[in-house]
Image (cartoon, rainbow, N blue to C red; front, side, top):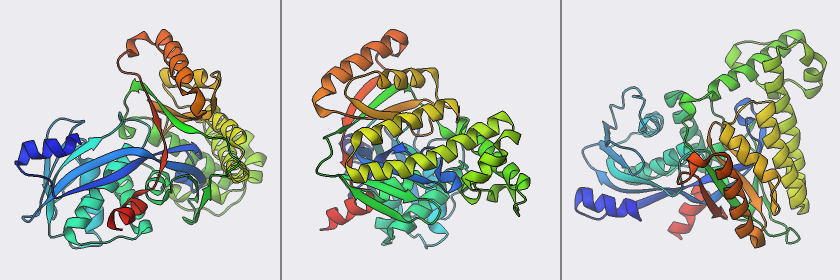
Length: 396
């Protein structure tokens, strides 16, 4: 791996360990976890690798192959965020140190196996970094504890109003299973792929536009949904408290239906997405259980439509990719991957039609956006184990 070679070039010795976290996709369940909804998702066989070695002086020194400038801080003096790529790692150090005494730092080199945007590389880099930092400090985390610490880092240090979708998919997933997670109580089911289900591959279409959630409209959309929920609480006589404690999960679909016409248009659209996405997730889990890939894919396409029209996310390039996907033979379903502010689209596709899908989508997309030639890319992936299972396999 390039990160191993770069580590040797920088430190003139081999790294003592390699940590890995997979990326994730969420075909149904987008823009839901932050308000305690339900999601379905997979980890995929691409992700973040970190080549690392311990530093006994407590210094953390990290280099990324995707970003310039080496980042450095001490495990006991993390400080405030600086606005650069390493804030996610500083946040991880901060969150881990709240519950554990850290004595050993690390030097490391980070490598991502796909372009950044839409596959939750932020959660993946936090998880891979936490794995490395825990290993040099002799700390073993349970899966839910790992999820919670990674979530704390991204939400409360970096400042993004995420839920636990990304971390959960990247930790709990199992190859050839669909993760069905309830973000209200963290209960989950791993639904095996039915022997009767048609074969599929996971396709990733990168628009060529990279994005950063901290600088996107992501937080605004979450606040608009919460504002709608807060108003629904008032209209319905529901006892409510602080704004940030309002969650769509606490208000029934029937209450939303009764009062939605009294909401400002933007708030109503955000709520419409959340409530209908909740229904799509439940229907999608049942479709997967039956082995009905066509029904599951159709729901994923519907999720993408709602993200465009109700959540109002997606750059023109992403919207065009989505539209092309809906018209391409061999694609069962798909949508924006991630928050939908630039980045990529994902799809479940017929393995026998991968070649024609690749040619058709690329031709139509680059006809619409010729400036993306050389930036747009296409990748085929498989479902994969999450971090916890990967580590168990490595120790076995």
